[in-house]
Image 1 (cartoon, rainbow, N blue to C red):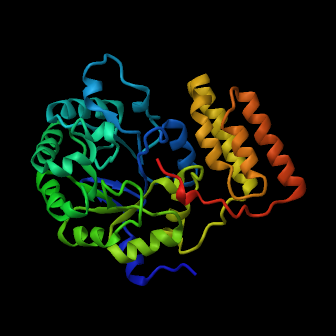
Image 2: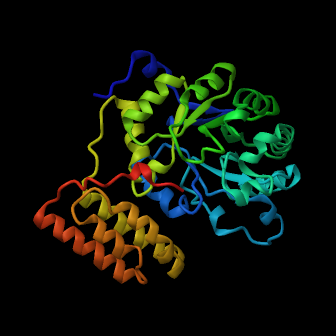
Image 3: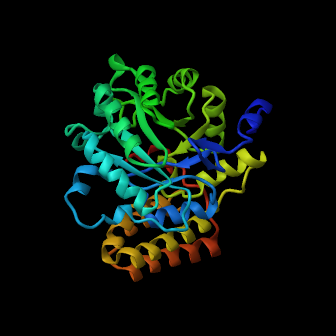
Length: 352
């Protein structure tokens, strides 16, 4: 049975303060490349209206050379609080990009210093900045000086087991002016493999005065509570656990605020959400949205008998009507026949 200790309840009773900006939730939706577009954020916000959302990460160099902002920077004026995440290794380009992000309506600017993907790190961005702390520090100082909103950093515990420098790196980010740090409890070398090492988050939290947000292996309410208890973090950020499950941030937030578990969605309710997601992606992006929807639809189709067959069909949809027909047929079948849990369903193993 999940429960909140009195000390944890007291610690989470007040809003999360990021500089002078307050957020009435200690649960954040992680930026996820190819996932956290405006449509996905709207779905997450249905169940977590107070939580901080993040755009997909934006390349500051690319932004420097275009006249019009990319679609991934588009935000709904009503989707507050919202942060735009940027990545690069050039302090001047990042400062310029941050100013554009603020003009677009960002409440905070988040700088990605944790992405492990080769195409990002080989160009000096993401987690490669863990090996260049002086550059990372210059970036934060430059962006802080350029914008009137809080600047935050998302990073990892180190480049590899032999190069874990989370404590020193985090202190430098705080000294440079970062107002919050989100720490993924894995090294760059780990990628998304092996357990997140929450003990390093606890060590970083013990030396910083700014809020520290714990990230990594938050797949359930129970995991979120255990992580908060073990790390002393000021909040948690949900990432891969929300793939095909935009309910998670709201479930964790509801429990932290009330001490009561929200009833999880049934397979039918998850498929109804998938239907909405598909429809909204088509309305927002047209045929490109349908192609992007394929991965989302397969993530939703888990946890019930015949889900594997449905996943295969949804993975190759070409039109909105085709996808809606498949989902409607699955909902009708589950409504009439009921469902059994699919033993192989394991959303925790999905990686991005």
